Image (cartoon, rainbow, N blue to C red; front, top):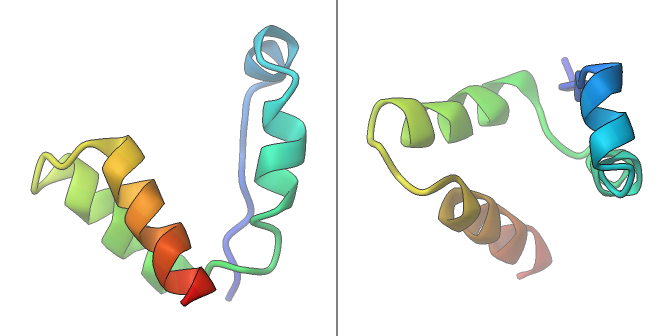
Length: 61
């Protein structure tokens, strides 16, 4: 199953550029992968920016 980004409308109003950025993730990340990324941030206390960067670098390579 693919992960669908969920964002509050209030957040999109505050950061309208998120709509385009999140659109790029559509169909590109599975639930399992999203859980692993969240685990890295929530449990292993990694920096979210670093986790995202590593994810996108692996996708390109």
